[in-house]
Amino acid sequence: MNAGILSAIAAYSLWGLLPVYWKAVQEVPAHEILCHRMVWSLGFSLLLLTIKNRWSWIRLAGRSRTVALMFVGSAVLIGANWFTYIWAVTHGHLVAASLGYFINPLVTVLLGVIVLREKLRPWQWASIGIAACGVLYLTYVYGSFPWIGLTLALTFAFYGLMRKTAKLGALEGLSLETAILFLPAAAYLVHLESAGAGAFGHAGAGTTLLLALTGVATALPLLLFAHGVRRISLTTTGLLHYIAPTFQFLLGVFAYQDPCTRTRLIGFCVVWLALLVYTTEGILARRARTEKRGPPGRGRAEEPVLPADGAGPV
Image 1 (cartoon, rainbow, N blue to C red):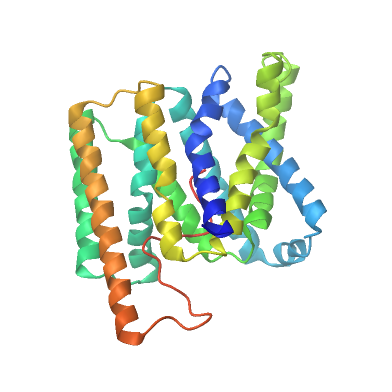
Image 2 (tube, rainbow, N blue to C red):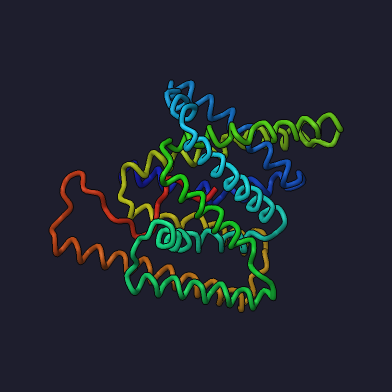
């Protein structure tokens, strides 16, 4: 197994186990955890940029209004995604959150069709239809709209769409996004501390340390992913994507006893069937093209089975 695959597996595994981290600080309100994540992620990102001496991107971001506006949008989306996920985990809705990352690839594909005018083959359309049926069934079973899963899927899909066309790499993009979010997050944390309501330094040494390490917890899997995705095919990347939501689902059911009734499990199985159809169709289509045209030449890009936009579940 090559280093690229190992790096990607490590990244997706860390993303899948991240609920354990948020559960460890669940005594802190979700919005306060979010602000710490924004502040400490910027600090850790700046440290890495200093070590790697990668500052040339600042000139591009500073002189391009388009780049700046794009990253304001992506910062808002990733902030909404982070908050929804942290809130879901700390309030006992991890299974519902995992649904969002199971259906995220198919939402991304649908956005590609609507926004980028990409073409889908019949079985790809069928997989999206099956997934839609699963979501409608879960809506019926829940008795309410599955807003947690769909909020996570939609915010991350739109985030991926914006990052797909962005001109900055993973670390540089994360640095700019967290820099945009830093001032309001830091101001809110200062307000909490001045009012004596902040958790940092007052909720125990362990909680304080974990809040300070949220930057590492955010950036480390992202860097591992960036290292791995450059060394493996997008097909492999797309398949490895499911490590993270699978871990989340299993943690929710077996470790944290999130409710997962038989009827809800049926809805998840419908979504998993959609993913199986899409993945199988992509593998067979790619194999057919390979047999028709011969093995890809050196440097030829491989078509992904599932979209890989430069980031994974966060």
